[in-house]
Image 1 (cartoon, rainbow, N blue to C red):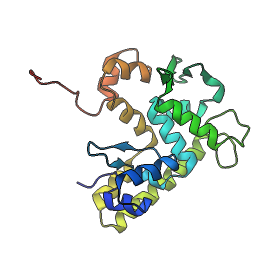
Image 2: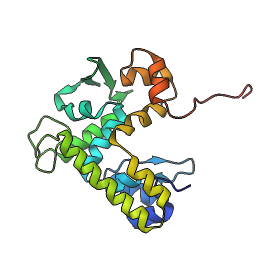
Image 3: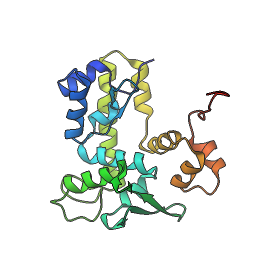
Length: 219
């Protein structure tokens, strides 16, 4: 089955390097979000690779906070209070404090917000997600950028004669980032808190899309 992750060949073509250490450095220098496989290979999403910087920021923020698109677009720099990002969910009214650091070191979210503020420092907007002119990103603006990046990724898959992959890319929505984030948190209660659910059953039924991780009877 074709994957939504760039292949080793595609990653080498993108970065200009075959060595994984150089690939990771290339991605890090450009502030691209990636995770590493067990073998240390950087994993980059196809649609992410086609996204402009402001869309990459929104995708990363949605993934690391697990919040709805409207709440991601509403996040402001003055929502940072000490070691927390304060979130007030528009749909549920729930208030969250998402941790930005541990043991005096910034975590992934803390580093992301630092990156966004550094990239947009010439703009006066208090919002994290802004367009190239420094204007707050609206949902239609985000939706258009998402559609363009998705279409570019789909066309590339079609040209590579990967119709199944192209079809899956065409169906992927920005809101699918939220259940992806939930599915990658091992502790169901932690996922429920982050998503703002009052009951873990909602998280399990609606947002968890992978099986629970179980330990064998003996280590």
